[in-house]
Length: 304
Ligand SMILES: Cc1cc2nc3c(=O)[nH]c(=O)nc-3n(C[C@H](O)[C@H](O)[C@H](O)COP(=O)(O)O)c2cc1C
Image (cartoon, rainbow, N blue to C red; front, side, top):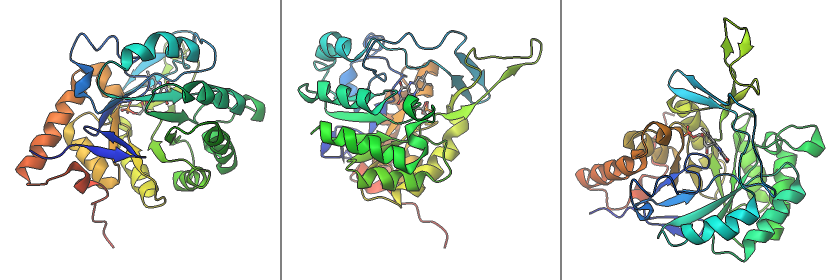
């Protein structure tokens, strides 16, 4: 049997498949379907300093081969997570990635400090949130603000720090280099791609927030391209996501340069999708006599 374990930023995952932040809550709804110990890890819902209700509905719209969401980081706040969700998650026998979000650098720093004395395995810093002190542009859309928030959170934590990049930029490789230089241990990508739908009868946007983030198979080729570009630009590990729905997608993402993968939208369609991907990868490795899943990472042979 092939070895499915992977190492990212010093953390060993028993397999490379991780439900993405926002697609799996804190795992409670999924425990009834299967033991969470089967997963490589869990990236929990993005957490802010204080509880957040998120955006008003409608905040989900279907799209061809994907979905548009403007949930707006609805979450119970970091203190609630540490007190009520984390103790349960830590009994599940899988790696826990705490996804951190904030509208100021100071908020993200404080959340990282609060996580410092917990047993979470890794912090995933979501830099796609609007920076309220800088006119609302997302931290992740300029090298300077991405570097600034990464450097400050880096100083606040000894946990492995993975920075989650926004695809809504001209050169994601430049942003990746900027966060690597500030001490990120890994990067994950992609977050959702900005999109919009309009109801032609009412002439109103379908989402109350007008715009939202596109995810699902529709974004997969964008994600593969970005993972490949980033993997070629940095030395730190890359965790790939965006549209992965089947095991073939996960293999493709790893060939592009991802050391592990996350799955978001696909879990809404099929809660068992991550397990099917794990089984499919294992079978593929065995059939092709590949001893370690990590042997796939970055093995794409680009044309000259
Ligand atoms: C409903 C929904 C909520 C999400 N919430 C978060 C979040 O809280 N933090 C975060 O970093 N990403 C969040 N994401 C982005 C996903 O983690 C992922 O980066 C993106 O959806 C692309 O992967 P996918 O195509 O497999 O869904 C969310 C995505 C969806 C669909």
